[in-house]
Length: 401
Image (cartoon, rainbow, N blue to C red; front, side, top):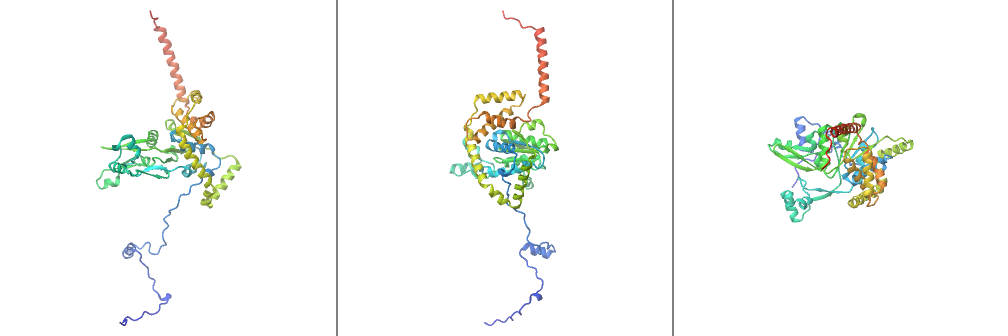
């Protein structure tokens, strides 16, 4: 059959009209309605990038800070770390670079955070119905995931931190509780930059959850208890304000992070930072072998930790040390003993030595003395002695007949 349509004449690019192509229904609607914002714009860069933290082992100097962070990772019972120092001393960089050293951990697949250990300790009724069915069928309730760094923003509200009513569900007249930042930090690292600038109610909620490993949210008749077993790390610049003593007491290790004073160390720090900025992948690859070795050593130390014991002689020395420093808080002993155990495990030993105690004592006992409390207790002791003297003078004890 002969084509009745005449052939199109050859086109010249200069004669072509300026035709705008339409690639989607949204673009068509924008054009028709006069909202053609993006028809002739280049494709937008969404800004997505792979996180490439500075290698932990590439940080120059700051050996005490690095040791404290590694001990807290090996033994979370230490109670967290407070990094105190001026700006630009690698506090935040060190925390963010920890992730490459940490082993994977088991995370719940359930919205409610059900774990196999719940069934083992509390029976099948301790998990939700769906997880109970999975457990009965032999299906896993968890999966291995990388440890995440959960950073708490300074503008966070208490509802954001602990959780509360789900605002999106409330719009549809449904009452649901949503998890907060503390719940999402379970089995991860919770990092609070400029911890001294947080409100008292938020820092108290964080420290209570850190101490117990769980916390409860109550909103009207609705109640939910969440796990919060995280490694707590806080940083602060003392120029911007101090932490209250009762808050500082809740941090296990306290590290003073000064600036580098050795010119050669400062020059080496600049060289490494410059190399990282020009080629982050190359810098990370340069330390990949050492990072992998440290990763395996941390796993081995964690596995060895339950077997590490403290001899009575070391316990006596530690208690004498705390007594002579007149430290009232019992958290001093907890932190000191747990840090010493982590130090021994890191050295592949099952018994704490005097060297372990010497290494961790400054980290654990620093900033725990209180001149006010010591003076107050001394004054009360003197008053009690005067009262006892008067009582004994006026009411002498009768000798038994």
